[in-house]
Image (cartoon, rainbow, N blue to C red; front, side, top):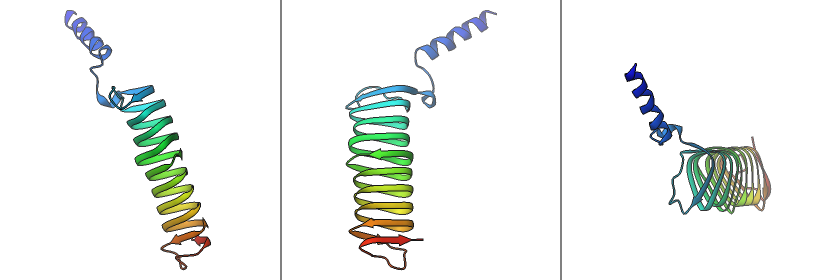
Amino acid sequence: MMKRFVASVFVAVALVSGARSEDYQISPIELSFLDFMYHPIDVAGLRLGIPYGSNDSVTGIDIGLWGKSTYLYGLQFNLLANLVTDRAGAIQLSIYNDTRSLVGIQAGLWNNVGGMTGVQVGLLNLADEVEGFQVGLINRAELMHGFQVGLVNVIRSAPLPFCPLMNVGF
């Protein structure tokens, strides 16, 4: 009986004191200031990055100057850059947007994506694979199922790889 009580107290103290597995560090709100403070692995809610926020996963809203995460699901609005190193199901709004895989929208001056289902709107739109469309001054895609509208439109796998004003890939 005493062993169970001591074990229960030990477990309770360990959980309350934060001695838990990194896999369970989730925060509903994170305030990042120069990345000097403690950062949970996952944010489910709101991340305010002043000027920089970095987490493994963000589900919700990411606002600041510069945001970086491995996964992002929601809205990412950082003034200078939105960086997602793996997958995003999001709307990214920034001067520079970059992700490996996106289902959603990128809107900024320079947009870069590996594979995308959705829309890119900006001055420079770069993508490896696109299902959707690109609207910008310069649009480039390696493989595209959709269309591009802009001054310079390049779809490397298309029968017509370059076409000004509008290009179509299928």
